[in-house]
Image (cartoon, rainbow, N blue to C red; front, side, top):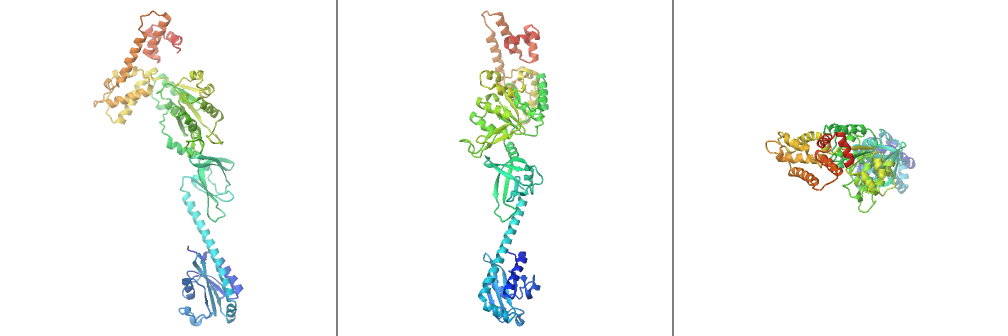
Length: 587
């Protein structure tokens, strides 16, 4: 084990003095290299010298491990090689090995230099042997204790070096809960540059998250939540009792966000389109981005509601925080609550036994986007309302109330007012969400944006599909601009992707590259208009007027330019057309 008596030299010298005083003879102690560690009387001046040339009896003891009494020093066979054999002044020598775990770590030599001393030792031989044996045991114990202390300090020194390279926080804590050492990650997570010497209180919340216990750390009157493990240190030290390895909840949330986030974000400046509707939308995004109020985005499917939500995020002060998107229609009803609010181990049957952090907690200090909010079950709407009002959540299966700072942006393609009338959506939640309403017009009502969108998607898919593009004829572009686009921007993008795939080597995106259902939609729309409005029966003028107004709105669309054309086709002013729309079509 490598015991070094020299490291407890002062203690060994004290024991040598005790032996000398009790026995009345001189004493020396050597280590297992025959280096004199301690000495009394004639040996006091020879401490810290090498005894290997003259310590022949000691060499024999190192080989045999047995104590030895030399009654006639100089004449004994063990003294043959000793350079002082012919003029040896010793009259008797008692040598006792010092053993620790069967390893000889040194030898005690009791040496008489007069006949009187020899007589005393011989007369009380067994008493002296037992006495020296006890002293040898004490020295061995002290040596072992020193070695264990050295190992402990070495272990801690190595531990200190290792933990500084860990990305988890590590604290070495004393018995009285004082931080003795902490790595760089611990300082970062705790928000304190100098943690050594500070008192810390670590209390379990009882919640298991990611199969790890959650703790509340109280330090300098500040509470910090973390998940981690406390390990007792099996070393003999008054300074070190436990090691706490942890990550604060903010870091856990950040790590989880990095793993789960697949978000495509968009900044306001990158929203494509120069129509009046799109320009107003960009203006409204910038205007509301700085607010903390909830936003409700409405619009048909495919209009880009999530892109608008991310644009609000990117323009806001929370741009460097998390944006967490939840599609309420894509998650089964039975799982949506746990997905939003999280749960702890054993919360319900079938749950992940490790527990899980919910989306609201994950989005803390950032933005949560609740897409398709109209598909949220009615019972969960009440819980969501409570979260919005109280600004706190409770994980399923836990009693711990967690304060949160989250801005909520919701979106839907449904008529929430009609759902309120049908008792399918809570009125109080609607007004809580609809603080800032943003409506996205369908693509057919802003045809001025189509050309710019077409160019953008052509560039995107030509690059993606590694195609050579030449141009798109004006006749094809006109078809695209006048199309109804029931699926909005998403349908337009899919159409352009198809066209680029079908493009010939000449690189021309003409009518031949358009999908077949593009023309089927046109034929179907014309057929529906003709079938619906061709009728031999006589109808009232009011009904006829209603039908013609509706027919004009279908043919020319709902954009400002389309309404002007509709008014001209009906032979009325634009103001009259608007009034007829409100009267007949509730627009």
